[in-house]
Amino acid sequence: MMKKITVKELTDNFIEVIGKEWMLVTAGTKDSFNTMTASWGGVGFLWNKPVVFVFVRPERYTHKFTEQNDSFTLSFLGEENKAIHKICGSKSGREVDKVKETGLKPVISERGNILFEQSRLSLECRKLYTTELKKENFLDEAIPKQWYDATHGDYHTVYVAEITDVWVK
Image 1 (cartoon, helix red, strand yellow):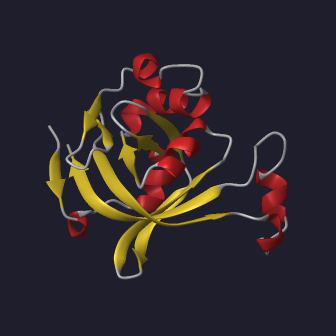
Image 2: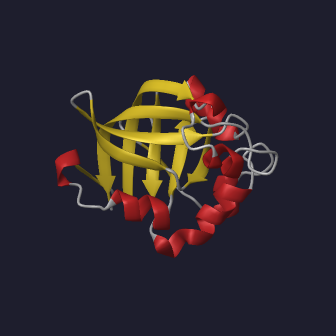
């Protein structure tokens, strides 16, 4: 059972949570959605709103759903569900049914977004701004050399989104 709380009630250290626990970025509708594991992003305050920022490479299947929808969710499953994250981060939703493969149990929120029963924490997010990372804008040349090549993939799309609802187990 998930309970709605306010953003101000959040106590998580998101540097720790995102970096070590990871998260699922999910976008789409109850009839068609995809989810992927992410370990890059953040939570903060911008434009007088509580926000998240996440990074999705254009070649990821989830990118299409994030582009086509006004909202997405971030789901934190806890360290005990690392196996789910490994599957959602290594297999494409174009080729496998991640829900079936992982045992994830989708829950449709009041706003029509996809949450998961296994989540200890879920953030519903409404997109406010998007941009593409560009090689020429990096001030530290080592970053694109390390993270953007044939092995890693294309430059990420950055999404800044308002946290509209927070759900906890």
